[in-house]
Image (tube, rainbow, N blue to C red; front, side, top):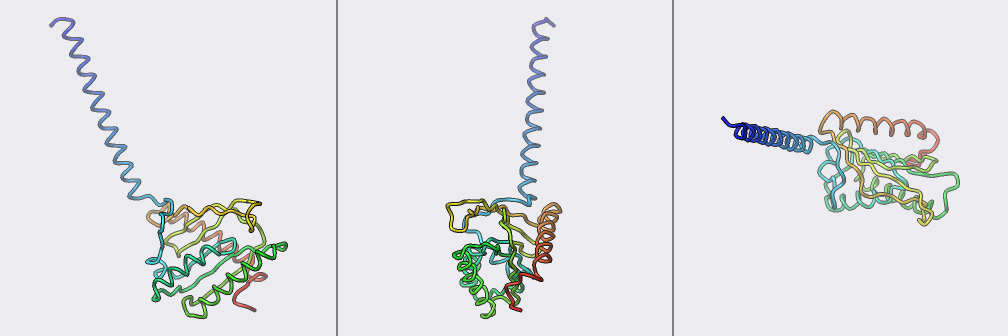
Length: 207
């Protein structure tokens, strides 16, 4: 066999091997991507996404908020659209600093009255609202141990509340052990905040 034929055969074999390895790697990455998508515990909130089917299934909803205004509006819409939904227990943490602006206090008090109204109408069985005294850098809501959505709060002197909120939060679900651990960590933070302020800054129920 001539030297040229041998070189050509070696080159062909190398090309086949390289193509085979490339195909195996491509299939591996495709499988890993599909597997990650199927088991992912974190994603961004989808446009117009609501949790109306999940809300009645959880025992406790926990909200860490600035003044709860946006969450109040969204939850009120869900309750209006489905009169059969009843929230079993809702605990809300809201900002109320010592030097809070009068306009912010007005907004907060209005929101508190609306939450109380939902309680009186029977749409919320148990309601607790507690104030904390500092500027938050994030917000989140826990739907039991099933899901938490979380977003940033930014300082913004041009806004009436001096803050700007990112309304495209990340969602963490209980689809795998890592997601379950993330939800537990948020719950631990929330419980720590409640224990810190509940004895001195509970706004509802009144004492």
